[in-house]
Image 1 (cartoon, one colour):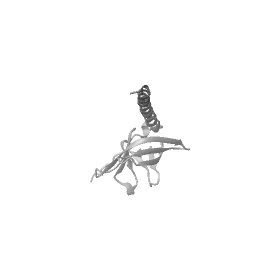
Image 2 (image 1 turned 60 degrees about the horizontal axis):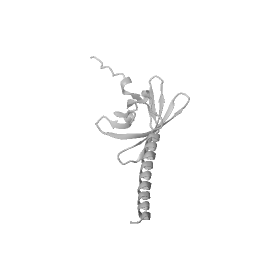
Image 3 (image 1 turned 90 degrees about the horizontal axis):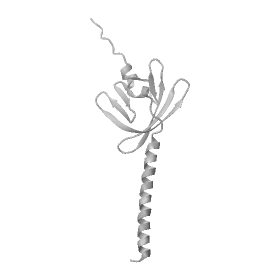
Image 4 (image 1 turned 90 degrees about the vertical axis):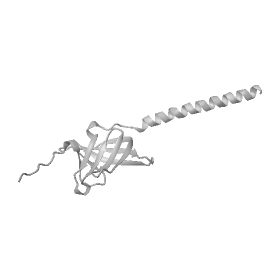
Length: 143
């Protein structure tokens, strides 16, 4: 083996190693950069629909996940990839980018208001959603 062949192999290995390291550096930076803003604590929780059309449906939001569900035990679980917010006059518009197992990206846009009651309104749906812990149970009427 000549000196030229040894030099070419070491240069090639070094080049591949650097390429591998830089690839991981960009991957980590990209993963951290995707998160964007964090969801506020007031938005985290289980939200129940008030519209009769969506009776029994719930939306659970955590810092990492969005879960859409129904009373029958059917739910769909998604991982949050990013969050953006925009302050409006009396509310905040949140756009949550999420993806499921297949990796298909989707967005959920909702308006959050701190009125009475504290509520969210999902884009393209009627009615408001109220946090489950803030719903007062209905009293049973005695006979």
